[in-house]
Image (cartoon, rainbow, N blue to C red; front, top):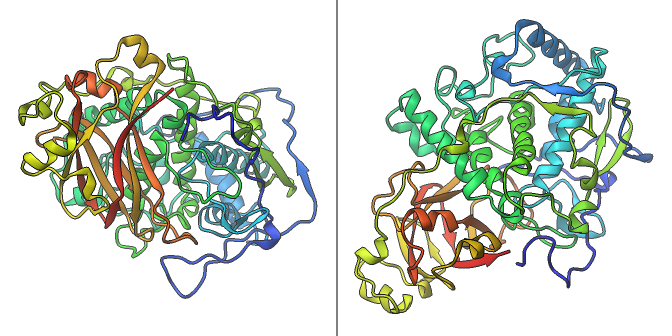
Length: 518
C-alpha cells in the first residue's frame, strides 16, 4: 500500500452511510440465536450542520471530577436508561450503534454482501468521534444542559491508572455496570499492554506499572506513530473487504483496555470485552473519550506528517446517527476533524509519557549470533539454529518464533529517516475472530523482556467480534521501527531478527517484511 492520500491511481470510493432499512441481525460468538442491534428506521435523513457555538464544552478527566459533576452525569444517564428501547436516544439504542457498525449488521451501500466495519482502518477515529458527539448531545438535552460534556478516562496518566471511581463506587448508580471485570476493580492497576496470560503473573508495583504504561504511550504516540497510516490505520474504500490494519492507538492501548475491562467470569467477555456488547458499559464512552483525545494530541506533536489525511475517500466517508431531537443525521469524516467546530475540547492534563523513551538496547543481536554483513537472510536462517526461514510462511504461531528479515535500506541519514519511516509489516494474520488474540513483536531481542524495552516493537491484539468474511487472511500489523533500530544499534545491519511471542488465542501469520513509507 502506498502512503495514505498519495496514490495517483486511487478511484473515488468513499464508504457511504449505511442503508439502515437493510440492517440485519448479527451473530455473536457463533451462537445460533442472533443479536438484534438494528436502529429504528427513518425515511428522512438530514445532513449535519455544525451548531452555533456560544461556549465550548470541556470534557473533564474522570479521575478529577467532583460530586456535583458525577451527580449530573448520573442523572443524565438515568434519564437515558429510562427511555423506551424503541427511542433512538435510549441507552439501549446508543449501545446498539457500536454493535451494528462493528458486528456485520450493515453491508456497504451499493455492495451487497460486503461488510461495513469501522475498526482496523482509517474509519476508527472519526466514527468513534461522531458516536461520542451524539451520545454527549443527547445526555445534555435530557437534563436541559447544552454545556454538559462527558468525561474521559485518563488512562495515559498515573491518576487514571485504575477504573474511574465514578463508574465503580456506587452499585445503584446509572454509571455502574455489573458486567465489568471483577478481578480488575479499583485499586487494581491498569496495564496498557494487558493480555489474559498476565492475570496469573506477579502484580506490579505502582511505579513499575506507571513507567511501563508511559513507555507504551511513547511508542504508540511518538516513535511508532510518525506517519498517517501508522496512527490512523490502513485505508478502507467502498467495495473493499474491511480489516486491513489497525492504527497504533487502536491496536494498543485501546484494545487491551477493552479486554481488561470485560467480565472474566462471562463466557463472551461482556460487556467491554466484546464488540457487540461494549457500548452497554457506560465506562466505554469514557474510554473512547481518551481515544478521541489522542487524535487531537497526536496532531499537536512535532512532525510534519502529523496531520489529518487529505484523501477524499476518507474525508467523504459517511455514517448515520440519531441526534438529540430524534433526527437521523448523515455525517462525514470531513466534518469531524476539528473538535472546536463540534463544540468541545478536552481538559488540559500533563503528558508524562512524552519523554518516556524505552530503555536503550546494547548490541545488535543479529551480530551476536554471527551473521556476517552481506550474508543473505535465507542463508543465515539455514545456518543459525532456531531461526525460521521466511520461506516457511505461513506458519501457525504456536511457540516463540524468530525470523531474520532483510532490510531494503540501511545506514540512512537523519534527513532520510524524516522523509521515510521504516516499517515492519506482519501480514496475512489469520485468527479466530470470536476469541481474544494477542502476540508481541520484538526486534533484535534476547529475552522478550517486556514493553518497556527498546527492542519491543508492538503487539497485535483483537477484541472478539463476528464478521461475515470469516476466512479473510489479509489483516496486517504495521509497526514503525526507525527509532527502535537506532536505539538497539541496528542502523547499519543488513537484516534484523524479528521475534513473535504468542500470548493469547490461536493465530497464523502469512509473512514478515520491511517497507518504507513517506
